[in-house]
Image (tube, rainbow, N blue to C red; front, side, top):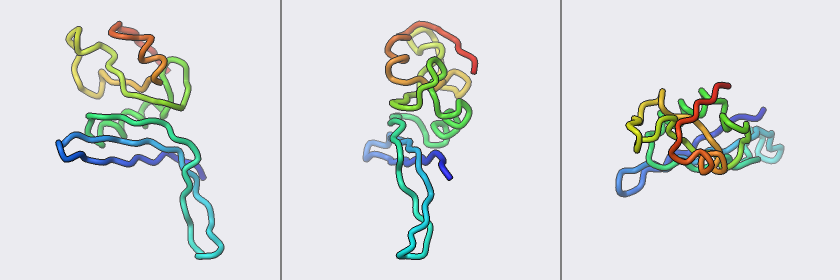
Length: 112
């Protein structure tokens, strides 16, 4: 079985770093137990609460809303904060680094 694993680390300054991995369960015959192995690194998200990161990634299916890639993912503001956007979940979306840079501070809505 393959699924998404989130690892949340709080820095000494109080900010969060969330690492997102694709992991697979496998049976370890030697230890007679189930183990998890990372099969793909999806990205790192900084500055958001773990609950928000998990919710946004699950809502968007852990893939870029623009090109549907599943690597180097970031959280992006639909309406940029420089144009009055907020940090609410409804204003956040998952984009890969390439699409996020291409979007810049423009307002582009994508529906899955």
